Length: 201
Picture 1: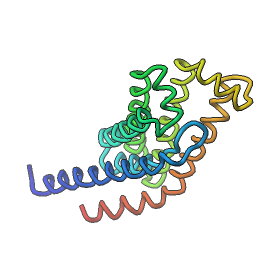
Picture 2: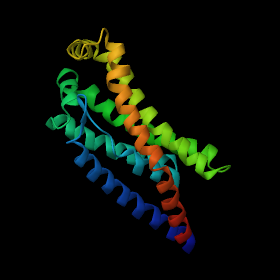
Picture 3: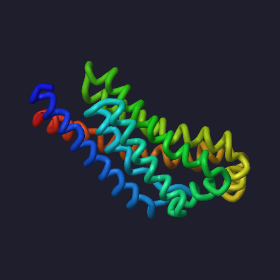
Picture 4: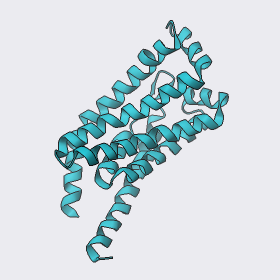
């Protein structure tokens, strides 16, 4: 392995470790911020950053780290909605927590790989948009398929006529818009960070 490749490898490991630590801190802080029965997701930005800098596999790894942090919040009850899902289907709930964020990181990396070569800014923006779509989309499908009775109870309590309507308007709508807003607003910041890291490489 050449000196340049070795330097890049070390940088990749160090930056990924830093991003993983940021994810843990952000999501632990977010456990106190609730939108409906679930906590808001603040950790997609470092996931996208890692996916853009180092590729889909790094994005998937960072997504998995985020998923594990969410699992801890779910099991301990810090995430109240997730805790109720965990009580109903423990293994599936933890699997969904890890799957949704891992796929979000992987897809963000793949999208940037496809688009970023032609236009860096558009590639980053597309990756930043794809991450919350995957994260919220997988959770929503899982809730409707496997937790329909629980979600129906939430829907009735909030005045919605069906579980589907509640998921689309009451959970997905608010969570997705919040996640998308955070990601899109911070896209210019992600661009600057990526340029700074690449200049030092």
